[in-house]
Image 1 (spheres, rainbow, N blue to C red):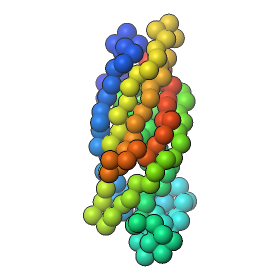
Image 2: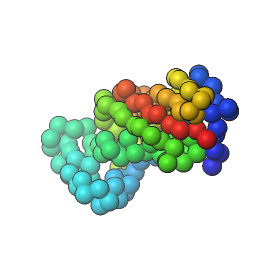
Image 3: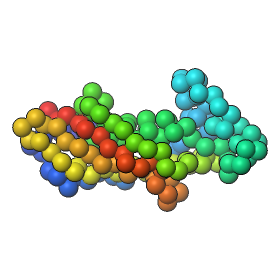
Image 4: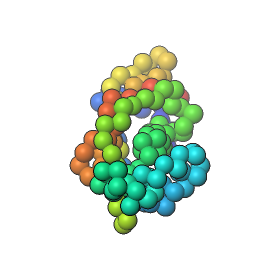
Length: 140
């Protein structure tokens, strides 16, 4: 893992897109860890029965996967000071799996404090699935 410093980062720097696979097993594992075992995330018949196109990923799984990509880029999860988003579309996970793509852009940087704002874009199947996705990070 590369540990970036404020001196090595500039406004406008980008990373990604990074592809993160999502399988139905990862949704089962996430449900067990989080306690969110809503059947729309695991049961294809149930998901279709309530009008969804297929099983969908948990929104918080999607946000967490995005945060993991950011943590890898910034040099560790302890460097993420704030992280927020709005959920704007579903990540559909067919039986053979799916993926999200995460990219980011540094939109502001305070060289004195080493803090920066990173705007993140997360998409699946060509659709943006997180909106207003922004994090404040601390560089060394």
